[in-house]
Length: 152
Image (tube, rainbow, N blue to C red):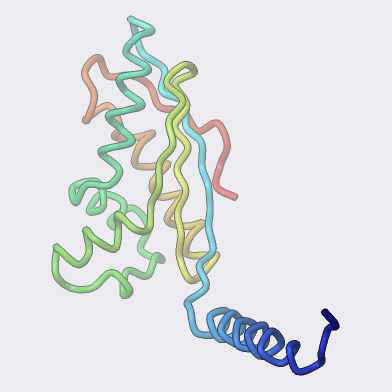
């Protein structure tokens, strides 16, 4: 069976439509930049507390209470994208911050996504500052929280 050029038209059309959709997505979807900070939870007594502390802090950073503390930390952070209602702010905050834990080492990695790279860095720094200064409020035994890698 011989190949005919007319068989190529549907394939080319399919490829061109796919490329057009992909290009439109790149221009229409909002771009988000990120900043990442790594923290170490150091227990004051029992080493097993570090794993528990990392899990608790990973959950706490998504809370409304924690968001309120972060929002008060740096007046140069723009919170306009987060809306006026508590439910909207909480939903947006939970989409903005991601946590990853390493329970063996007590490391907590937090990633912040934002349209503006500078704002992502400011938010990540504010999150780290709140955890270092006030992280013990969420944990028993008042462990120490240290910044291992500042926001990038």
